[in-house]
Amino acid sequence: MELKDQFDPDLRKIIKKQKKAAVIPVGSIEQHGAHLPLSTDSDIVTDIAKRTADRCGFLLLPTISYGVSFEHAPLFNLSVRGSTLQKMITEICISLLKNDIRTVFIINGHYSNQKFLQHIPVIVKRQTRGKTRVFVFSYWHFMSQRFDHAGLVETSLMRAISNKVNMKKAKRGLVTDALPKHKVALLNKLASESFTRATKSGVWGDPRRATRREGNRIRTEIVRNLVKVCQTCLTEKNRKLHH
Image (cartoon, rainbow, N blue to C red):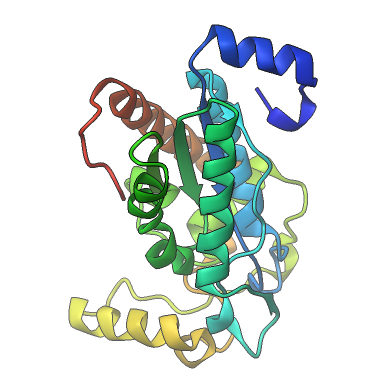
């Protein structure tokens, strides 16, 4: 159920009658190579969050499309400071409590948002005196594939959910499959500081064999696993599940 499409009297009745949880998708606006749009992270997390909310009967809030993407400079990104993102979502959670919504799932779609989002459950718990529970998940932790940036996985997911992919411009980027783990770890650290120092094209992975079928398969796996964990969070109050 998408919150933005509801009417006030009806929504208040629904909330009063049922204990509703809310889902906040968080994405980014940043470069994704020459073949994927700037909205890729936001598009993917919106789709996954909607499917999860529909399966669980949650209220889906509008996607927060601006994230912490400074590492992609000088390639295009529209970024906010981590503290800004953290404060905004914290205040949304507090506002939800005032509307008697006490459980919030934050589903993240951009890697560099994680370190700021992961502190929100503790901040909100303190500010609401334990009245609101917040769970933070990054969707790629719920799939078996190794994540990439504008590579096979992201491109396949986008092919499954969008018509904005331009496969004619898809080119191989940085591929780390044959590299030892310590080398990959160094590249990961480098990319978190300056993505273009790790891969000049802005692509981590090889998107050329991405398919809609593979994207649908990955999406199904992610949603299935997310639904299970969200349901566990609702039934086990003290379980710590922050991915």
